[in-house]
Length: 166
Image 1 (cartoon, rainbow, N blue to C red):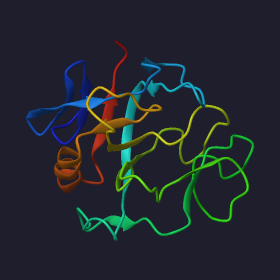
Image 2: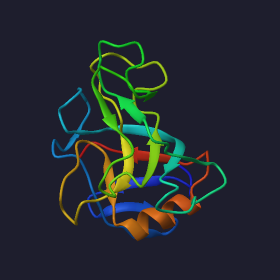
Image 3: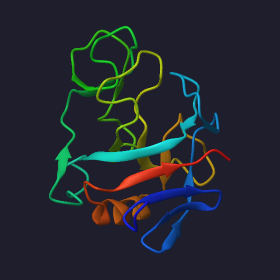
Image 4: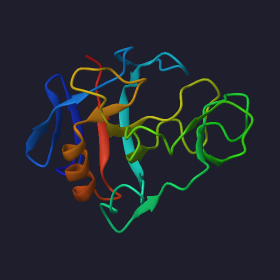
């Protein structure tokens, strides 16, 4: 672990010398993550990218990429592009990244089960904004919107998210 890492603790995520409140998956923290279990996976996960809605917010860093209309995330374990960014039209299981609500206005991508996805091992472990404090995610780590923005401005391509078994 380095000072640039995000470390999930029972009190929140420790990063740059402070604690950031967060929510995790409804399935808790698991070492045996599976697609659809709602769990946040144990491990050290690199932050591989930043996506943002350019019609709603400014880019938080020079390496952030815009979420375009038609950007989707494949969550169909039977497809070769499972756990990857795909484009509409896409007739298989997916999640829209350009949502009507603000949940995915800013997304930090992790390397969970990527780039060589194992079918069924779970997809799309993002860091994104929370619905509200204490409301669980589908496995992602979620933050207050202004905190997520501050984190996104300070991370680097070397930043990792560490999730330990509790």
